[in-house]
Length: 527
Ligand SMILES: Cc1cc2nc3c(=O)[nH]c(=O)nc-3n(C[C@H](O)[C@H](O)[C@H](O)COP(=O)(O)OP(=O)(O)OC[C@H]3O[C@@H](n4cnc5c(N)ncnc54)[C@H](O)[C@@H]3O)c2cc1C
Image (spheres, rainbow, N blue to C red):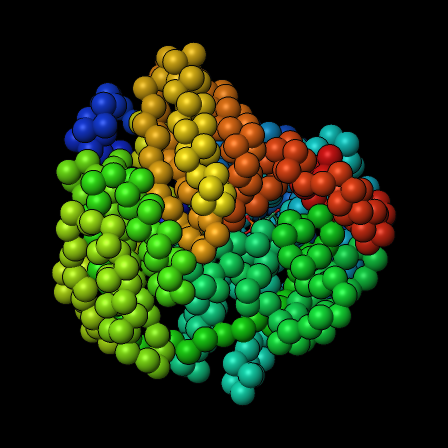
């Protein structure tokens, strides 16, 4: 364990040296100066005086400590990171609370409701959509950030049904290390796995990195408990149920607007033993996508089947020849994966790959030989550190994602490209747009875009303009504003365009019934 960065991703000692990226960036046409932007030191940051004194609430830990307030001021979007780097903490909460059980959460929510204080649930704080930053604080008597990470225990493991009752404040590594002695895994690995929480995943309907099959946290939920300002709700623990609208589904994705999820029974899987990896290159992105569609519609369920466009492939070290790469993986706890891998390769070979590397097979504990998707996974997990370094070089570096049915893909991809090109011309940006497919379904796919850009203007303003343009392109071409990054405050306007009006009214009424004072994460999901 190291020291967590206040402004950037992860541990300070794992930070990437910005200047070391110069050759790679030159390859993409970016100019890099000799002086990375310095980080404003925490003790020199201007922080408004807290509007509230920490209340004495039955021994619950509540503080107005400066560092605690700074650490709960931002999520981890590009804008958050630049704000932190520059020392802009104008939306820091007045108070931070660290409840240890459901009873304490209820006391805090009722105190907030009675005092007119906005309450912002905070798990790992990795939101990329403004989910943990209360910008509406002026309309309240204060803002309290409710940190769930002291509720971080496994309450029960049911080995017979293969499920565990987990408290919401557990971070990804805590979950997996607690389950490993049972030979079990939640098998939910968002890229933010190391620093995000069970409650955050449930509240945002997070997506793990497996490309097909059960990968969204929704797929694993048997039941959950949520504390609202009016009381506690626990849904019935069931493997499946056809009894009316699902209460779990009402609370999943509620992003802290209805209450604080405190625990959940989640389905587990056996640790995988057999693994296989291969990577293929194709002459074009379109050709690789055709192969991907055939694969997802074949009935096979690879754990990995990501397609990287030419730029992504160059970054990852695959398909240096300007084509696209398809990374393929299978894993299983019990059955050998050779038959599935061979069947998948047979499907993909029909789409004329330029090259096939692998397959490499391994069993747990043994290293795969010659598996370039292993390289890709390392790059995947260290990418957030890379982004911090790009930010310190004064570049825009951010991602956005969506999902669309296969028939709408070409239109959506073209619309996003056009939006980035037009905005870049307007702002004088040199911009590179990269695309990879993170999740694939028989009826559609989830394109994930990265923008790296450089220009004469202010990076926060320029990114806001690009983001507005690409979000409008996603919605107008039939995509969703988010496949797994959530809505938060940043996507709310575009979310309003895609959800039905009557549903919005119904959701607002539901919120009114459990949060009559309107203190739960105001500004998120609802206006
Ligand atoms: C580098 C990076 C990579 C990422 N990769 C992925 C990815 O692969 N897949 C993915 O889905 N997302 C990804 N994200 C987004 C983010 O990690 C997810 O949204 C994650 O689920 C947030 O979890 P958290 O614990 O950090 O929640 P937070 O950021 O603390 O909160 C997120 C939202 O949920 C609410 N909330 C948090 N805990 C609770 C609770 N217990 N009860 C009620 N509401 C709560 C908050 O108020 C906020 O609105 C990534 C983010 C970054 C910065």
